[in-house]
Length: 211
Image (tube, rainbow, N blue to C red; front, side, top):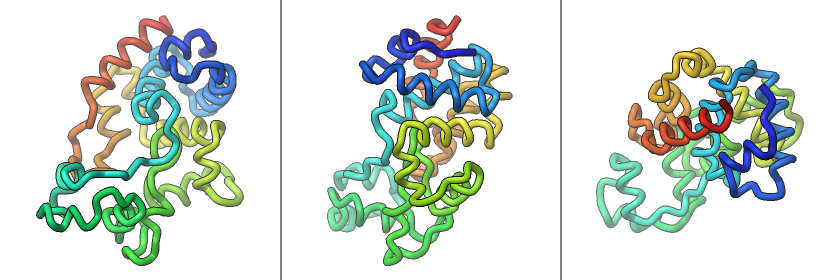
């Protein structure tokens, strides 16, 4: 399976003139992690494109309104007044909602912000960042590496392989893949496959493009 710039532009038009750069990174990453059939590539690309806003987003956006905070983390923001104390303050939000989980320290540690979602599949938390760094031999700041095109592509393919998505792609199981990719790890809606309809639509589109 060898993705072309023309195919990527049909899947993610926003990449524009950078299509060649993205394709090189994606092909290298997909080859390394056995995303080597049109079906596997279509499922992988659909999820990556959805999570990354057509490969344009490499860091999690936490600029939530009070209403957004309450909808996304209802148990952490049970009241409007409490949510308003954090609204539109991304760093403060990250340090609070990601404290004491995913390998992070407490709110004062700053780990929530430091290890917020990064890369095209938005890997989140100290544990995930350190794991991908160890697995892929990243030297230096892993967050910065995840924001690079090679890092975003390779980390996405590594995570896809790590959680077993190739087998699910072979079976055409969009729901199962969506749960593994989203995992509710950035929200409390575990098992909700956030954006499922869009993921399904993108998968069908990718299958048509790559067939």
